[in-house]
Each structure stands twice: as structure tokens, then as C-alpha cells.
Amino acid sequence: MRGAAGRAAGLAREALSALASVVIAPECAACGRALERPDLGAVCPACWQAVRRFTPPVCPACGISVSPHATGPAGPCEACQSGARVVSAARAVGPYEGRLREIIHACKYERRPSLAGPLATLLLEAGREVLDGADVVVPVPLHWTRRHQRGFNQAEALATRLGVPVARALRRTRRTRPQVELPAGDRHRNVSGAFGLARCAGGPPGRVRWRRGARPLAGRIVVLVDDVATTGATLDACARVLLEAGAREVRALTAARVASPRR
Ligand SMILES: [Zn+2]
Ligand SMILES: [Zn+2]
Image (cartoon, rainbow, N blue to C red; front, side):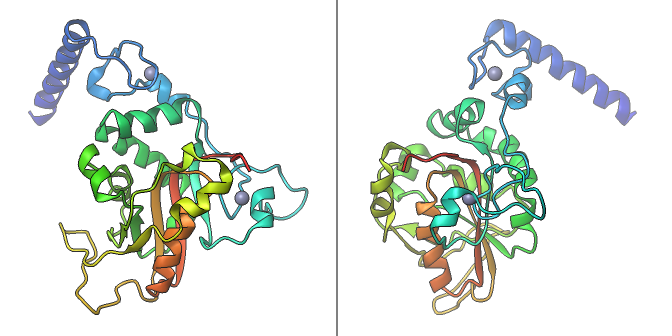
């Protein structure tokens, strides 16, 4: 009985979807072609398929693909060899380009938080190692004025879908320019001191709560979550605050990473 009802509902949904594709003709948020099945989401299956991933072996520190090592595990990439990072290990789905970039843009600037669901599925795949043993995930915060403009924080929309308790542990203490718009030399200064510990982190179930004086991050393994990492300066600035608050280790997981930031 339920099976028949389910099939009927499925057929009705497909029929409505077909109707919608003719009447409203919504376009894929990434490639702009008409969506054959708008009910499957704002981005067409071909675009999801075309998302480039960082394939193993990846740099253990930042997660970008590196050339295979003859023997033993992959070593750090060139950028990670030269600079000490505060984040112990970072992973990302793929480079910040092509379809992935279009999808992230659509999610963030065209206000399509519904894209966070399928994006988070990709994050779960790419982030297996950094999520392993994690106690809590912390989204990189937006300044409250920007969050107000956008209506949601894309980092938080991703963080809440990773199956790990979420703590809104950080706040942005001042507005900063998007890192991707800046030359490499200015990025560190742009975010340095721009983050602080949130005064409270209450909210819906699944979130880590704390009271004044409590140290909920003490001894915890924390995973920072964001949509894009450029040089990693933002992640490092956030990690410093979390380590100061007692976190044992800070890792990071982002949807995309700029694979060769301009130095
Ligand atoms: Zn498309
Ligand atoms: Zn690296």
C-alpha cells in the first residue's frame, strides 16, 4: 500500500517537475542551462559531476593534490614546506575554480542555501581524515553585518551537516575584505586579530552550549569549517583563538582551496 502511494507521489513529483521545467524554466545555478529536473536541486547533475576534486596523494597539511612519492606517504606541498601552520591538517573538496567555484558563488551570493546539502556530502568524503575523532566543528563566522545582508552563513550551513556537534565558538570582531580579492602579502594583515571567542554559544539542539567561565573547547579536537580557503590565513587566525581557548588540536575542512595562491 505504502509502496504504491510512494510510487504515485514520485510520479506526481516528476510530473510537477517536468511542468515546472516548461513553465518556469529554471536554470542551473552553475552552468545556466535549463534544468530538466528542477526538483533535484538548483545545480544540474552534469555540473556536480564536473566538480574537480583533489585526488590522492594530497598534502597532509593543506589537502591539495601533490605528485606521488616514490616510497612512503606523500610529503607536504611546496607552500606547506616553507611556512609553519597553526591548523594541524586541512582538507578541501577541490580547487577553487570551474564548477565548484560557480556552485559556491551561487550558494553564497545568489542566496541558495539549499546547495549546502549536496556540498556537505562532498565535504564528508573529502574530510574523512580530519573529521575522524573530531569532538566539535566550528564554522568560520561572518561579520554580523554581512550575515545580516546575506541572511545566512554558508560556513555554518555546511558545518551543521557533518554529523559532528557544532559550536558557534567564534565571532568576527571587525569587517574584513574577502581574502580572494587581495594580493597574498595583504591577506595575513587583513584577518590578523579579526576573530575572537564568541561570548556565548547557545542555540538549537546539536550545538555545543557554554556558560560564562566554562571552557567547552578545553582538550577538544576542533574542525574549522569554511567555504573557501585562500592561503589559509583566515583558518590560522581562527585556529589561534581556539587554541588559546584550550583546544587540543585544530583541523580544517573547506569546500574549496585556492591551489596555487599568488605569492
Ligand atoms: Zn549545470
Ligand atoms: Zn600543503
